[in-house]
Image (cartoon, rainbow, N blue to C red; front, top):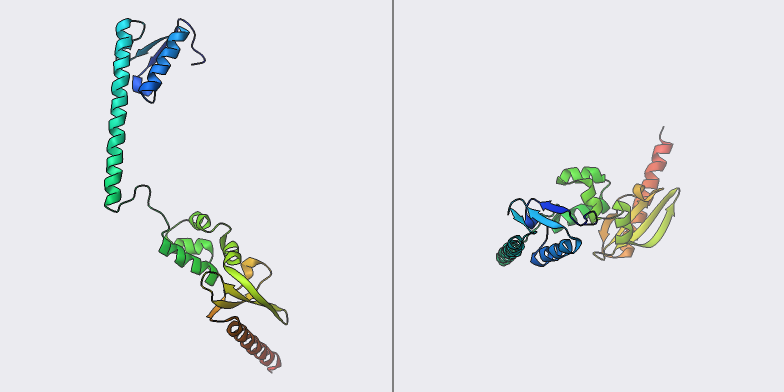
Length: 215
């Protein structure tokens, strides 16, 4: 529109490619007329430099709007019928609620890589990252609340509470969140988780001592 000047002619393949609706087409025609620019449609073979052409332009724009309104009404009717039948429009979700729960348990309860989990469920790793922003470490930090910390030799251990279920676990801490062990449990109370942690620590220390003293 900015490039057009008086005496020019704007040629379009069809009027319905020029404007979005009846009002839009009329506004464009008035703006062109104010600039001294004529309008011609190849499909309708109409030239607005003539009174007859301007009349046909108005009629064509009305029918174009009528066609859009019919399509819109049919679409709304179809969507309402689909909704009543229990069908929802749009692209099916790659991850439903059940799959999300299973994947969440694997993220917090195993050391499987996100790529391996995605391949197992037939989805892309990006789908998992979209569902769980920040990946395993962010999910673990959000889901588990630290109840107590322990140190056994060079090892660091924690008792944590699952904010989702209210159950308790213990885990071995690594140098980075990615190296943390999967939580052991669940236990009904923090004391039960701590007792299990201490038993496992003592058993591990005894086994290490036997291996050291073995001939």
